[in-house]
Length: 462
Ligand code: ARG
Image 1 (cartoon, helix red, strand yellow):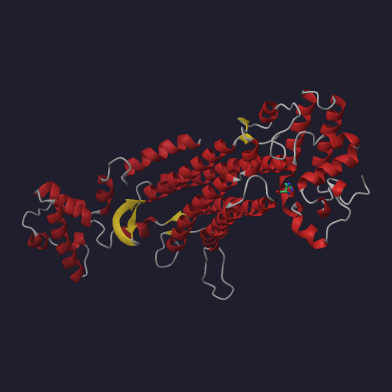
Image 2 (cartoon, protein in one colour):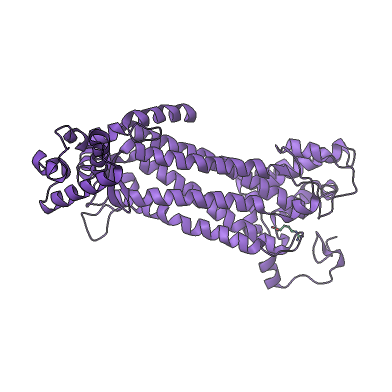
C-alpha cells in the first residue's frame, strides 16, 4: 500500500496531489477539535462489528486499545497531525494502523467518512448544546441574585429610551431571566431533534454488512438511528439550529450589554461595573471603560455571520454529501466558542456589578413617570373615560413642565384647574413607590410579584 499516491484511497491514483490541492482539501487544521468524538464513534463501531461477527473479538480488542492510545496521544499533545492525511478521520485511522497494524484496516467496514463526519459533528454540537445550557443557567442565577437584592428598588422603565413608567430593578433583571429561559429551551429542543445517530448509513446508501445500528446509537447516547441514509449524510440542519439558537441568544446578550454600557455611564450612574470587568484608558486617567460589555454587545456580529455563512454553504446543494460541507465546521466552532465566552463575561459582569438605588430612584422620579398613574386615578376615582383622563393628565404634564416641576410638585389647586374632581388622594398615586406597588397584575412590576418570581426561579435553577 505504501507505494500508492495516498494510503487511504490511493489505489486508482498514479500521482499525489498538488500542494495547493492538499491545502484547500485539508480540514485537519480545524476538525482535530472533533478527535474525542471521532474516537468515541470508532470505538462504538468496532464493538458493534465484533458483536455481530463482522470482525473478530481479537481485532476489536486491538482496535479498542489502539484507539485509547491515539486518544491519549492527542490529549497529551504528542500526536503528530498530518495535512497530507486531510482530516481527523484519516489521521486517527493512519495512526491506529501504525500502532496495531492490519486490524486497523477492518475498522472502516460498513461505514464511510460521510457518516463518520456527520456523526462526529453531531456529537460535537450536541455536547455544545449541553455546555451552552449550563452557561445560560449560571447567568440566570446571577440575574436572579441581582433581582433578589433589588426587588423593590424603583427605576425608570423605558420605551423609546424615554422615561415611561416606574418599574423595579428586580423586574428588569427578571426580564432577562425569562429571555434566557427561552434560549435554554431552544438549545434543548435542537438537541432533542438532532439526537439521531447517522453512523452506519455509510457513504450514502447504507451497507450490505449485517450491522446493528440500534446498538451503536444506544452506545453513543442517541435516541435512535436515523431512518434515511441519504438524509443522514446530507443534512446539517442540526448545526443550523444550533447557530440560530446561538444567534438569538447573542442578540439577547447584546441588549443587556448595551444597557450595561448606558447604565454605567456618568450620565446615568445606574450601575457600577467591577474593576475585574472594566479597563482603563492609557491617556484619560478618570476613565473606566465597559469593554467586556461592549465586546459582548458585538459578538452577535460573528455569530449571526456564522449562521448566514452556513445557510449559504448549504443552500442549493444536491443530495447527498458534497465537499462544500467541509466548510460547515469552522464557523460553528467560532460561534460556539464566542457564545460561551460572552456568556461567561456577562455572568461575571452581572455577578460583580452594583446598582445604585439612589440614582435609579432619582431617575424614576423625574420625567413625569407617574403620569399613567394619574390618568388611572382619574378613571378609578373620578369616573372619567380613559381617553379623557389621558387628556387631563397631558394638560397637567404640560403645566408642570412649564413650571419646571414634576407631577407630585403641583398644588391641589393647580390639579383642580385641569379637572375639578381631583382631590387630595391623588398625591398618593404620584409617588414612584406606590406606583410600582400598585402594579400587582400577574407578570407586573410590583415588588411582591418580583419576589414571587425570584423564589420560583431560585427553585428551578437549584
Ligand atoms: N473532511 C471531510 C468533511 O469535513 C470528511 C468527509 C469526507 N468525505 C468525502 N467523501 N470526501 O466533510
